[in-house]
Length: 295
Image (tube, rainbow, N blue to C red; front, side, top):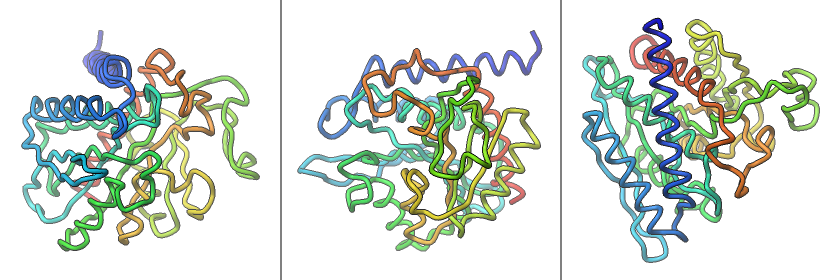
């Protein structure tokens, strides 16, 4: 076995371990299943610390209960005040949430592991956000909005935000990929790719990320920068950063446009493709190195 094949095999195994823990062993995790939300937060924290990160929390109250964003920081060596953020939400919508969003949290954790020993010019913040799902989406209690507002108030120099949102479901079957009206004329009908999604203001970032991914990976990738009102375009934590004027994109398997298990009890770890996820994470690592050093 080659070194690269061995690394990919380890990445795939690590991703599955995280997803099984979050979606199967812990299960539905949100403020209405508060003990499980706390267990998920503890697991994520333990993993960040295992990789050598100092972990900080942004804690606030919702319905009289403390909830928290979990922040692992990798300090830049040359431009420490310039920040790259990569994030994913760790709560669910009344289901096991393997793809939505244990897959993205697993990707976040594995990226933090792969990046831990690599010096970067800019600071990278790996953040697990709470309260992305309804009824908190696009409200003041949404974890990423709480974070983005505070970052803006602090004057944080955030150069780019990457939000991971459902990165685990893939299919090579014809017509396995759906789109909003008319978009299907321009994109593949097989759901075997990862997508980079942004608004018009984030178009330069979408283009740079897509180019960087293609230079380092042969895994299929598609991109779009379009109107935020198109269903699904702003349906994750990148929306919060758009509200504060930060360039932000979503990396996604396109969620409900592909995965028939979206927000259902059938969103389980057995339905995901860990080999494809590992390839996506390898491409994301190259993107992080580019954004933190050359961008």
